[in-house]
Length: 72
Image (cartoon, rainbow, N blue to C red; front, side, top):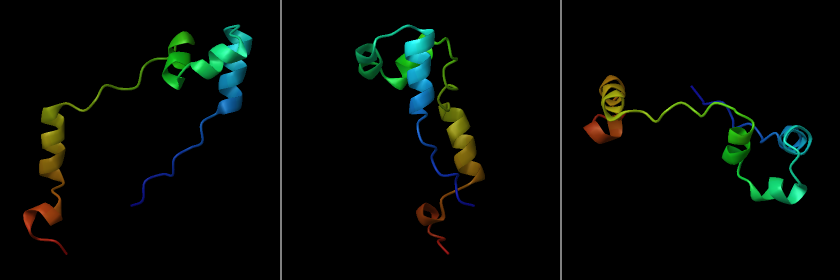
């Protein structure tokens, strides 16, 4: 199964939000990171990083054959 291709960053929407909703100047927008813009807009943060125990559980459920010596 192939992962979904990455989506392009929505520059037009980001610029409209920064200049229109937040009232930022263009130079403020271009100096900010996407994460800073999201925070200024009150967007929730991304989900937390995977915990070590969750990672180990995934690894046990889906072992890498190249590491176990049973590569196809």
